Amino acid sequence: MHVTDARWDANGYGLGRGDNMNDQHTDRGSAFSGALLLMATVIVVILTAAMFFGNFSFDSEQTEKPEPEIAFDYTDNPDTADALFIRHREGARINPMQLTVRVEGATCTGDIDPNGEYGAHEEFGLAEDNWVSPGMALVVDDDNPVQMCGDGEFSLDGATVTLLWENPEGEYETIDRWQN
Image (cartoon, rainbow, N blue to C red; front, side, top):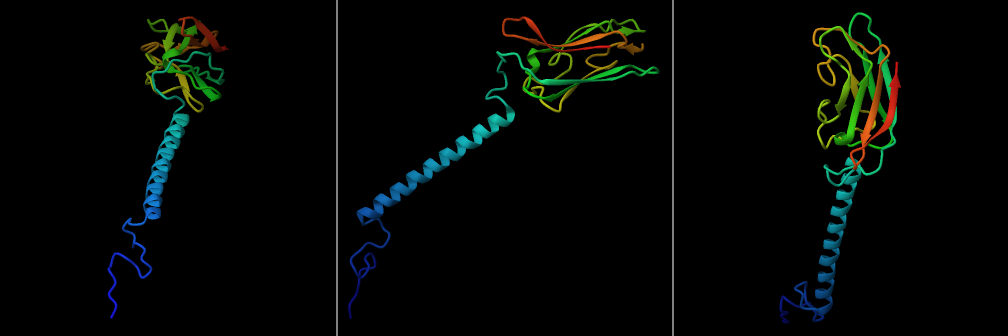
C-alpha cells in the first residue's frame, strides 16, 4: 500500500498551499488585480457622483458667468397678488451664493416697498449646496422671496425683474431680464 502525504498530489505538486512558486505568484497577482479593480470602481463612483452633483465641493465659487436658458411665467391676478416664476429651463447651474433677483417698479398697496435686490441664498432660502439647476424655479410674489406687501396687494404691472450673477470681483452681470 502506497501512502501519499496529504500536502502533495501524486505528481509531487503542492495542493493549493502556496508551495509552488507559480501558485504564489498567481495568488499575489490576483490580489493586486483585485485591489486595482476595487480602487478603479471607487474612483468611477466618486466621479459619477461629482458629475451628478455638478461640483467637487459645495462651496466652490463660479468663476465664469453661467449661461442658462431662463423662462419667465407671469400670472396677473387682479383680485390677489401677481406672481412671476423664474424657471431654469436648461444649461449651466448657478451657485445660489452668487445669484440675485432685482425687482424694480413693483407696487404694493401696503406699507412695504417690494423693490430691491434679493439673494437666492439669503432671501429665497436656497442652501449653499442647492445650486439652481434645470427644473428649478424662483417665485416672486407677495410672499416670496420675503413678505413683500404685508396685508397689501402686490403688483408687477410695469415692473422689471432682473436675474443677476455676482462675479468673483463682486460685480453684477445680467443673466436675463423680464419686463411687464
